[in-house]
Length: 430
Image (cartoon, rainbow, N blue to C red; front, side):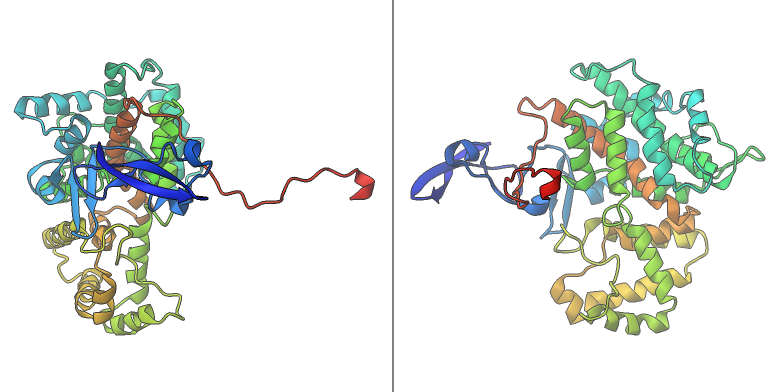
């Protein structure tokens, strides 16, 4: 909301004022929407590091405090006291469900878990060794060809059906991508299982025997989903919003978000962290790699430490460390080589003046790769798991955007630095 405060800008001797807007938490912002009309100028902000692209009530991050809030609730409390579908309900509706709302919502999601049988044939168009994220981009985008019965997105009922379908079908599609890659038969969803247990059934079950999800492992994966459900205006969320600003259907918007998430600088960080641990190999070599990480002339980077947003401890990392210990304890892998290596790296990073000064604390990706590997999820599927969880946030942000009375199609400006205007010469004169 606007305040009585204003920001003054002087350009060529002319002074113009812009209102200052204030939110519930975080930095105030200068409303520069009239900048072009008042001055003939635009701002330059590569990477949008100092630009608020929207108003949102969904998620708030305080990087200095190491705080993450979903609709005002701390992520720690949500992960410990709620399951993923309760968090999905919260993000979509703004409030946590009561007992009846929780039951009704879970029942609704279960009714949408199957995908159109013809969509199964779509997978056959991919090579067996195709990256699962490539498959995800194609299949999720193709959903719009199968579910075009609700396209009036000004209608809250149509938006709700689209939300429910995507949240319900993503676990099925992710599991199918995995099964197709491994050559195993697809497993149909089971409505007698909860959301995360059903996903594990579709991932790891076979027609040969009845699959019984381990409750400790299921809970661990459910927490992983919660920790990745939303994260403010990151690259993939901004992609979903920008795609949706044109009026594109939500299946296409989510496919765009998945494509963005696939980038190694975004969703692939946990995979890179696991690869780094494998490269180090043993606790005895930690000192060597810590030294390399400090060397400006060495290209080696300590993955899983530091975060673009969090200038303090990533609150999700603390939870993930506990989840990691619980999973390895349940599986009898307390002495797992990578886990011991990760604990030693974390210990040094929290004590070494170099890392403390630069605030390079462990982030959520530091432990999530170890947890997923222990659960039996291959490295190539890590980002698919991320996309499954983040679809809740993407859909929530998409709906918030298209119901915002101020929303317009996205149209960033640019600072053109190419050739000046010139005329085309005849071919013989070039």
